[in-house]
Image 1 (cartoon, rainbow, N blue to C red):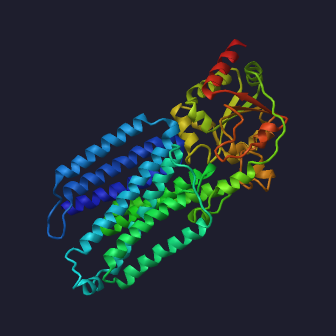
Image 2 (cartoon, one colour):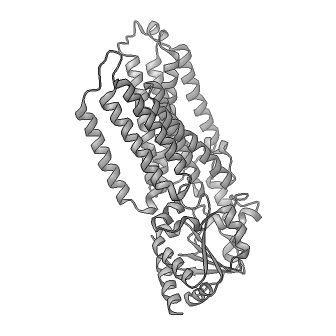
Length: 477
């Protein structure tokens, strides 16, 4: 009876994961979908703790350690999520994702140690020859993928918060490929032949996987980080699925497969949005520094500035305005005042919408989360294809802290490192007002051709202060 109840708990958990993932596909239902999936996870965890029995009929013990770990993790996670700023959200996601990869790797290590319990040098060859090859294969997969995900996510976390700088060396791509092949070869050798040195080789694979995770993320920089975060997330899902196989745990398996599949699809979509090759991500040549340096040496003309009062007049008497949010909006914590500006313009009869680029910000969906925090109507958020269809009928585009995702060089300059990347066609609007703190290049480190076009005017200053002044100016008209 208890087994049937536990199976039911796992079934409920699996179903809620699928429902929650489906609800995440639309901003209006995303928050509720998150809660639904979390509730399913809570049911699965409680069922495992209180209802699980092994073949001998023994349940779990050491409840003090189990609930102590749950309590500490809950408190730390809750406090981190409550205190994190929107600008730091991508690095927190990377850190949490890295913890998931570490857990998957630790599961493989623990289960490997269970397999080799009682091993001696004298009986080593005979013992390893009798190991279950399938179990060993799953353990190796969980170890490699989880270790790469953990190490890569920690490097991504450090790069996003500025503690770690981009790093690369000559021949790094080839070195990464050789290192990956060595890891895979060693793993295959362990699974197929199970030599007496299996324990040594196992930990060598573990160490090399950590090194590979570090090296494959190190050279990645610029606007490419959202793709890396998505890819590492899919790695963690696959590693968790391996843990589900090891424990014959259906809900862990389902959750891992869903995360792995969703992360992989998102990675492919991100690569398409960046016009990059997934192969280059895997060998660590994504958005390399050399390409960025090449694109930064271009000569540009003069730009023109616009005053707050002129900007206010243009916007107050426009028929249609498109707002393009970027990382600068998140840095300034200006999403709420931006929503206030939108409502003020709507009261004056102006149609206001938001144009969202898939890789705006530092992680997939960063701008959607930012604007959702300010209660912006989801129907006003247009995806890139929809927005591009409407720019030609837009009177004013207000670019708030976005840079690379509106750079026309992606379409016109073959020498640019972002050439071929789909962008928001803000240059098609009648007037483009760009708010930036200065003329410094964006996250990709390259100059933006948009700033020097005749229809573009620069409005310098902190996004929050500029928007507050704009609201005040428009109210006075």
